[in-house]
Image (cartoon, rainbow, N blue to C red; front, side, top):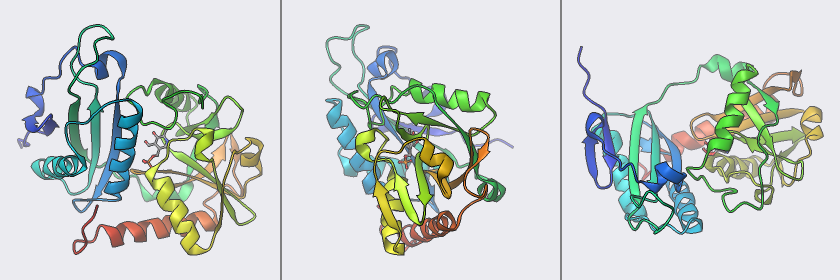
Amino acid sequence: MSRKEEVVYLSSELVPRSSVAISPFDHGFLYGYGVFDTLRTYGGRFFRLNAHLGRLFASLDILGLTCPLNAEGIQDALYETIRANGLEEARVRLTVSAGEGEAAPEPLPTTPTVLITARPLTPIADSAYQKGYSAVIGGPLTNTASPLCGVKSCSYTGFLLARHRARGAGVQESLLLNEKGHLTEGSFTNLFLVKDGTLITSDLASGPLPGITRGAVLELAWVLGVVVEERPIDPSELAAADEAFLTNSVLEVMPLTQANGRPVGGGGPGRITKSLMAAYKDAVRRETARSETAT
Ligand SMILES: Cc1ncc(COP(=O)(O)O)c(C=O)c1O
């Protein structure tokens, strides 16, 4: 059976994947100069799209890049791409790189490249959520003084190395420390702990990415009446936690049930974790329902 070829959005055009041509002098490729975002669609709608775009534009600003499309233009391009690929449940990657320049750091390129790919979402088995993920602690340090700290920049090698470290240890995630020795986040997730009924996550000054799922979970926790603390986290707090979980836009809320080979809390998804998993799913259902403008 022949499948329709995947279509990619590249700087204002939808192009069959086999014809995509990105310049060998794109500074995104040469220097990792650019930003990206990973989004998930539900029934053809994005969840918290405005928040994703807000983070993208804030990151572009920090890197001194001006996107050729405004937020509305990007939104249209995202929807065009999923529709052109006939996808309802998709994993979508949006990249805005610095664009084509010289094979040298200067002069700065003038027109950023906008690239969007959309692929069928590979669902994560329910059994994974029931069991929870395991993590190791360590890997490249988060440097809170770096201009890239908290920016979802294309210079992602440190996070990839941390992820490889997790794979090498036979677990799903690697938890990162900053230069002060505080736990910041995972290599592709934000980290939450629960202790004595209080939900704790690293404050943004400690260096985690301001995850969109993190933001939604913090909001939902307030609604559920869970006390929230955003503050530096000492690694010893993970060993002493009653519960822990990880968040990202594709994974949603994933219990973290083992760290460094030891069970976290009771070694299974905790009570507050489960209520936030359910509350997140409800929020997604509500906000991506067909009758609403899902932005
Ligand atoms: C390092 C890192 N932290 C946190 C997250 C979670 O971000 P979001 O909830 O916006 O997907 C990601 C997402 O990929 C990430 O790469």
